[in-house]
Length: 569
Image 1: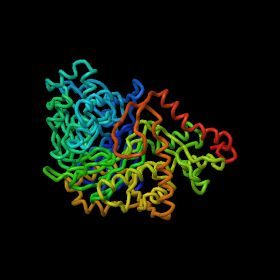
Image 2: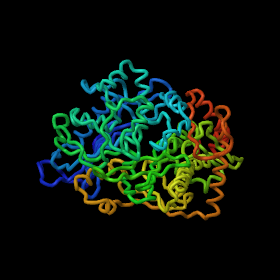
Image 3: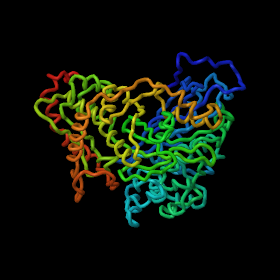
Image 4: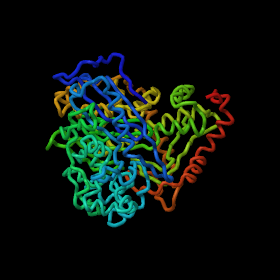
């Protein structure tokens, strides 16, 4: 962590106030850290600072953040990145944030009632199951309003959990004293010294409380979860001047407009300038998040995807909708191969080791460690390595792990094409795993489409900056932003159609073999679109199941690792 500047960044020290802003700022409040960046008119990063915050795990499956610590980190990174730069040089700031993470605080004291419940926390599973069972349709019964299934992932279930487990929370909310927000709302409330309680349409669409057609809090949804409307923030456009920074709170940004708000995946899609219907991006991090622009049409998914609001430009502007699918294990699978199997020393070594073999030798690794996510939604699935023979080496296992991310993204993109009836011609990719060029080429091969990686890798922060800059006319149009987008690398598909079909068929055979491992009475056979998400197993169960699925691979590592050159990896 810390502050860094591009070598070519202009020295702003001593310039003083300027009539024309030179920069747009972006707060990127993520799951593990908070960053602040400044972008110039060409979309280049000229200054940045980053600080991590602590992860709290009070119980297995529970994840919390301290909202006050996150606010402290936010003020620190702003001060560091803004050193020597006058607030008048910043035309506006945008905010992008981890979505769904839930904060409830006392608006009179500014104190959170409890730690923030993070998006991937499973504690509200009982709440989700209970609400789903209250009416026909189960977990999908609110999809026509929200585009989402009723699962612990989304904010409404977390709010209810707080009501039921934090003394006085429900009463305080009904009295209008306790108010709710996702991280964007919390930061704006702090940046404006409590004068603005806002969220944008992209974040609101991830709460299970906003009607994605009307872009308003829906009375039926509020009644379903018994959440009082008075505790909810005002919903505003993603790109509009909605507030200004209070200089008494953050002197470095005194008076600067807050004119961009986007959830992190929507921000990455905006930063990848996916402004046309059918354009899509994939972010490869711990998991992988895939989003496709469906334009002014909220496409209902029949193939296990989420329908969500992408963004809204300007007051009264037409919303842009997206289809979204998430993959649980992408970069985390490579970390698992490193930490649990010891096949590589660091994640960056995965490409080197995978290139020791020409291909995976029909070895397939399906990382369904906690079930299959989009587009299958099968909680009974468990991870598997299949197709092994005595021929295979540890390098084949590593290569299969790398290729697994591409196959999983392929499945989500296929579902998107079926839902949207748009065939993908190109995929824009970002995230840490894009440094693995073997993965990027294989991704292009299995989806039969061009894969591109942008020159500016910080697409999430860039998207927030773009939204803010458009609202304040720092940039004139979406077309201008498209002209600023530059590709760093590009991969065209090189695989024959026959080989692609063969690999896809075998991948789906491997996926089918992951089913019916956990739980009872699960439906047999592979299908997409089911949204029955069951309880995450305990840490002991999960570790045992993970170990059982790779016992054969471990045997090969022991027996053949040294001869494959992996004993030193």
